[in-house]
Image: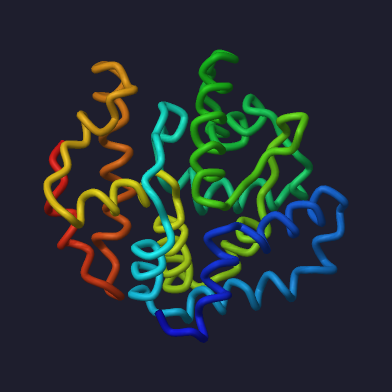
Amino acid sequence: MDFKYKEQLKNFFNFEIDYRTNISIQENKFDLVKKDVIEYIYDIINIPIEHFVTYINYNCKCEPIVASDVFQFSNINDATYNICSIIKSIGNPGLKFKKIGELLLNDGKSRTDIALNKYGENHIKTAEALGLAFKNNQKYYYLSGLGLLYCELTADLQEKLLTRLVLRNKLIIQIFILAQNGNLNLEAFLYDLSKSTYARRKSNVKRIINILEKSNEYEFKYFINNITY
């Protein structure tokens, strides 16, 4: 691995800057660190993807995956751009699932509290899994520093950042480690899920992996083609 990227990648995969920024956000001091987070985003975006791959291969280990690690969402845009845009627009106050569901499903249609709660939960947890959101000890959810700045990026830079965030996700790292070395049956790998739960969630995993497949920065098909669903 190129030494000049080693510390940056270590901080990224260990969430070092993310965690510090989360504290500032909860203390309503994001403006004091915003410049640093912007620099962090551009530093990460400017590291070629192959160095992320090398970092994973040399530094990441196989870890057990449980049901809560597996993506569950209805609309990837609601879990990324839309959720960032909407929560930022109201000042990132710290929200519970139901309110997040109401904000995302603000289309005039009547829905039950259960439906709103579940929609909010699924999409903020996906944003959290990608590093765009986090929860505090009281389980209120906030946009992270990356989430607050995501919508300010151009579409091209959003795509580059999201590709890198996908590569940092625990589930995707495990799939990548295994699938690049041979065939991986996803259902067998996710043995912790019941058949019905797997049937619901496999399309979500495929949608996240598709973000990598669409990248024009790196050829990910050498491991993606080894995955069977």
